[in-house]
Length: 309
Ligand code: MG
Ligand code: MG
Ligand code: MG
Image (tube, rainbow, N blue to C red; front, side, top):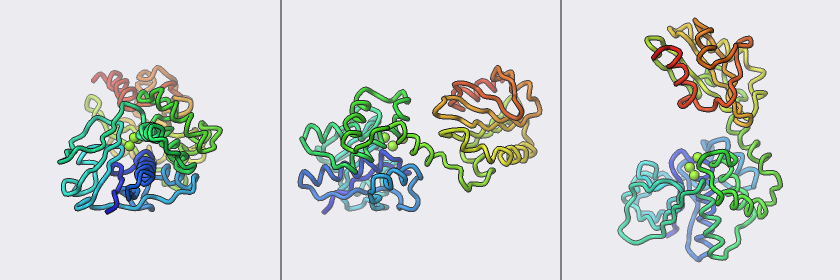
């Protein structure tokens, strides 16, 4: 029986790349293993799709039910993120970089979880220890996984081990410019092409009650503000429509992940209040707020203060 190597549900690039990488390592050691994912290739997220294309790799095969199978988990160890009926499977290995989850086993297994930024960083070390060469295309997708999980080293989860693994893998994969590679991935992830303005506004949107006022805040993470230059008027119209449906304000955070700030688009009954909240001045319909990246940690608390919550 082949070992199905699989990452978490709603797979990200690490879950896909780590499944490919660990399946290859198991095969190199003489096991029968196959890379799997909890998605069909057509519904895989745009970033991972671009990554697989870039290095000429096929998507892992879809697994829907783990019952009766031998399973190796990567990038998670939680029952809730594992394939259906994981309790009726035999989990034979786990490679991860998260807190230990709630999977249990009847037998001792290979369990390698480390506090680093990406599962592929752990796998790179495993290849090194075992003295097995990583094929060029697999090194490429592992490299992308580390750049993605660590947000190109900017995430607080990034460690020196992740940076060292990137240095190893870029050489094997023949990639000179990892910043350019990260930008390509970010553009794929944040693509707005052909998406209706209202869908973009609601892509990552939440309503809040601010002292009796309904305030909506959406966010689009972008590689560059140029990505939305041509659709700003449409976005603004969509915001006006949403505001007209009983809201005090609708804000849209156009977050430039590279410049690390947000162009905050505002439709409000009280522009002065919003300006005060962010200590800024609207220039037309928006204002640049340097360093604003997080709705939860930055935007909402400042609004709550301004609304006297
Ligand atoms: Mg993940
Ligand atoms: Mg990960
Ligand atoms: Mg991730």
